[in-house]
Image (cartoon, rainbow, N blue to C red; front, side):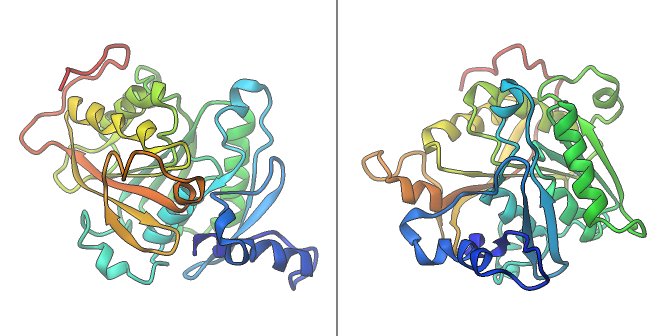
Length: 302
């Protein structure tokens, strides 16, 4: 279970009784599954099979605008991406059949909506040639990501790691214009819960994703806000010249099932929505040349 990979820091080398109990909540109370971890200003530890314990500080946002982005938590979708690219899943070989390999060694990687920066940090540790961790350009959010990078990525790392402020859909600033189609892997974890931002997020993915045939974007999102919030995003990306190479659902225990826009009668209980995530692999449409994108205009009607 993904939640079992997260624990709270202990003041001593060994976990306190309280920390052990807190880390076990997902196992004890399976009907009250946690899909977000930590509290603003606190820290959590991600227990990586490949790289050991990674301690992540959680930002304490200043102002309502930054707080509404929910970068102050570590979400299960981010943990799942970290597990996939870090080789932590027990079914890693099976996952390779879904949208190709999740190996990032030698790739140029960009994380959108990085939050704590976990996925980008694991990408650097896993041998990516270059990693850019980006999030909304609030100073405290970017400073917190830099703290986590400095804490967890050794200075001797062969990866080039940078933290950049990027507001989705803003593609005319110096960073965006100089990095068009620069990344062979673009990652976004739990970024689909704001439907009013779908077009801007899709525009950023299209802009930064390399137009080489092997380039891929990985999008993972929890259903905690309801699948109706997520589904329109995939119509938008297709309208902008991407294609969905593969898409499916995966739960916190690694069980998988087909993706559907509506499951059953359309109503899912809260515990089910917290348990399941959508996993999608995107690429530039092979028969279409990527075109200029203006996030201020709506995509063509399907």
